[in-house]
Image (cartoon, rainbow, N blue to C red; front, side):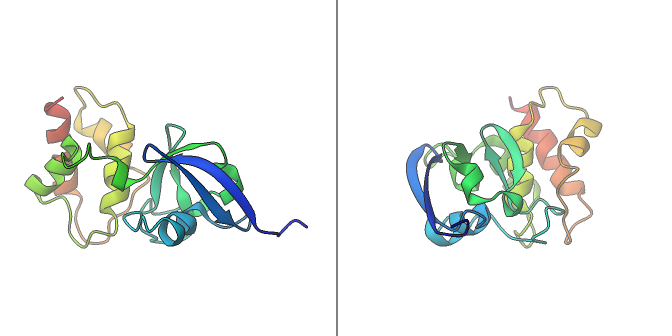
Amino acid sequence: MADAPISIRCRVNGTDRALHGHPMTRLLDALRVELHLTGTKEGCGEGECGACSISLDGRLVNSCLVPLIQADGSDVITIEGVAQGERLHAVQEAFIAYGGAQCGICTPGMILAAHAWELDRASAEDVREALAGNLCRCTGYTKIFEAVEAAERTK
């Protein structure tokens, strides 16, 4: 039966996990509901805003568009997996220092997008391109761009 519940195995933030649900359950929902990883946000539910961005096998994806079955055997990194223990990643630190976060809905996706790109010696244009798939409804993006540029300077 095509819609019978399934179990998959994947590595989430460095830990082997099992997820359960219907094959077309959105990975976003499995992460938030089953694993309680609520840092990944739902913005539009259509893959347009980037709020639900995660790393799937090293590629930035919109988790609202990824069916659970597609994540079987994959390596998933959510915003909860970006920090190294209690030590925040440079991009996370810069978002705090430069006021890059406002309401917080877009912030995890923005951080994952910046984290996914190798932006050594990034120009302002490079940062804008790296974040192009992420929308923010609260800011004019200036503080977000400044935060990412600052984080890249610390590498």
